[in-house]
Length: 285
Length: 259
Ligand SMILES: Nc1ncnc2c1ncn2[C@@H]1O[C@H](COP(=O)(O)OP(=O)(O)OP(=O)(O)O)[C@@H](O)[C@H]1O
Ligand SMILES: [Mg+2]
Image (cartoon, rainbow over the protein chains, first blue to last red):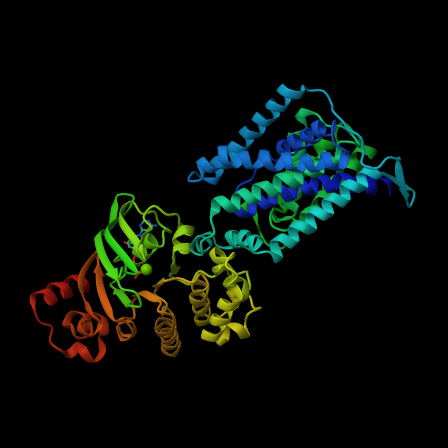
């Protein structure tokens, strides 16, 4: 039970990052490997804000920072390359990730940072396991983010316009939907959910400048499990990744947990590229 | 009065291959003009350049007196020029209603969506019956209605249609053509109709152009084109095929088009 509860919080984080991957991929077809570093930028935004703002507002600032960094990345690095192949764009995201990581290290150093939880008091005990209250906030925030996004995509015209672009980009252009506008929205949303949720995790552990790469890859696995398409399944995928990680850490070796998760990634790509979905999405990843 | 659509000296290349060669033409407000021509003549390319799905590099386009030459695709739609693309291109995994709503995307702040939706459903009652169905599961004819309805939702002054009769039964083709006529007669819509089905197109249109290898080789009133021996010979076929083709232009044209 304890493993499940721990995995729940971690899984929400990976799931949120995975959703960040999916939103951008659905629209543009590319994989944004800077996702983890964008989230870390958001977390550091929250750390800075926490010195003057209460924790919940600081997390809001974290989401905003993630969104701004993500949008800047699109306009400075991806938009100028929009006529290049997806492969080129995807490789560029790796470079942008490194740039963001270096910039954060330059500003904040490599040491860990933290801020106060939203609710004081330690943990909630459920069925023999315990979960920090802050982790409940994290899970709640992820769920709210997910529901908000689901509402946005299914019920609002802008959300439908984003979906329309992934269904038929040519026709979306024909009805007057602008790719630049849609991509700006998609990058903002993906940066916001990843940055906000990671910021919510900071009080329970801590954040370092170099955390982005590993986080991003775990979010990437969650996105694969979601078929790079379904937001809900991506959350489930995040939970699965986290559960594997937690169980390995507990029963085998904490040091090797990440290695085994990445081995899982390779096996997954070979055996089941469509993730938890029924459709083969291999050609899209 | 300014023309609803004015195209001047428009050329287009795919890479180095020239597809459109210095085309100029105008369409008056409320006029229906058809562009007919063989496969590969450049008809779809022309409409896509006017609608700015393709970049406009050489030449100028104006919609209702406003130059759209420097505009983005969405600005062109907002200015009042909408394309009904070849092969319908509906959003297949979205519902009929969502397809229509997205057609009105550029008018989303105008508060006219409900009224326009009502008008589309009046023009095509079939779409209202199927409003919750996924567009990809509609029949070809219904998808064509949807493509026309979607363009209508942007309140265009000029509608560009690329082979709306493609793959449609004669009855369905007639239905679509009747709706086009109704949109012109009731709303003053200006229509540019690209067609393989010259018979249906010339029956509806006021004027027509014959496009071949990126150039207009013939133009005139629909009646004149219907009577033109070359057009008769190549496009209207059937009963007219036994008639004699005469005149130097007709001869060379017939030879050129027949190959
Ligand atoms: N994307 C493209 N790249 C290169 N050449 C193209 C492209 N699209 C069309 N062409 C070429 O441009 C020419 C004109 O094509 P276009 O589609 O405009 O013809 P069309 O008159 O619409 O023909 P159809 O009646 O078959 O639809 C053709 O020779 C075609 O092969
Ligand atoms: Mg064509």
